[in-house]
Length: 79
Length: 457
Image (tube, rainbow over all chains, first blue to last red; front, side, top):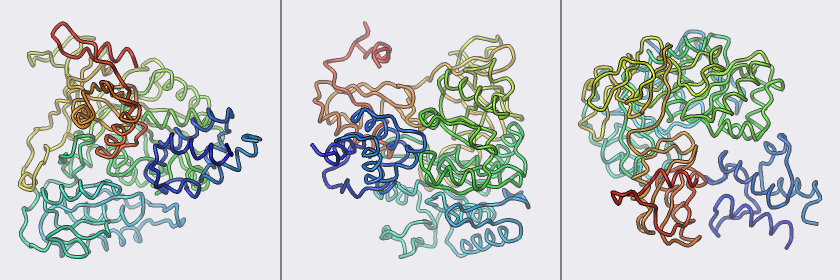
């Protein structure tokens, strides 16, 4: 499974998203589910799935799906 | 009597604009004037963390117009229900299709409406009730008395800069705004929240001095490895909205003290505008777990089951608060807007607790089955009712969330039930941990053994 697909799955599970949501273009606070509470659940779920640990700066900079993909690539995850 | 001290300032983080002095007073008067031609009745204000919303709130307060503060993200269905029940003069902060009987800019077409009681200033929804929310009626004098008492115990002066880390329709968020504006301090309007980069950039850029949070904010700050050394101006943390774990209280208190700052743990209810108690920062270390002594002007008493006050320290009963900040009462319909004070300054909190020999309150539980979801009070029996279409349910509190056991349910059903709870109560879905169960443990009486369920979570 590609990195994008795995991450999409994590977003859908952690934020309990409907199929209609365009996950790959999602930005923080675009939808009710991705608010500050959802963000923390999401960060924890991403860390579990990819076995990584984000720094404080990364947690507060993770403002979109695409940014999360780039951060994971930075960890060498999903390769 | 006004909320706005001559030195008070509002900073809009989105634009950097700083409003103060005569300019701010002028903008508030303008907002007040816009309300002058509206028909009689309460105002509904969908209040966001933006300048327009805050100017409207202050305008209504200064104009002596009763205003109900509502969640801007509230479901249209719930709003329509409230509009039908309370017939507000206007709904501000909405650009949706108008409700029946309202003009395109949401002004009521029928000029006749119940005039709210002249003392009534602010109404706040009681959190968590299902489908049929009611309002807490707060008088002008209660709002001002509480703002002043809070400022006194926290030592708020004109040098403080407080960000809007909480929504303004939430009583704690409103009180942060009120208590700072009243002392001539600055309120920074910032809407992105403590997990986002713009918030922390604004903390640094605008020299934020304090941060208000409910327990889940402290869980987040711990997760973010919050370090006060990185924010040299930020020297005060306040916490309310539910009991914070003792280890987190100690951790943050130690961090702040080491950095030359302070932490305050507080207790309140929307019904008290909302603050009732605050632990003085210098005593927090020895009083971890306490809600603190009553605010200046207030007193606590503990009642036994027969309704008699318990004089002895350390004996638990129902917590009763008396003070100038207690609500006038509730309102469930338009007619009740006209009611005067029904409480006489006495609030029977529904919380169980005791006072120690120093007069510090310790909360031990609730009379009714109540849980907290991210700082919002929810009735656990109501939760069970909401999901009964999915099967028999048993809800128990679990820190800042609730766990709902659903009899005979599959994983997918649990997910749907969590979603329904989230949508009905407009609280984040991760606050509802719905788990499959095979029957529930029972007491000899045949009732659900909630204690044993709580022990499982």
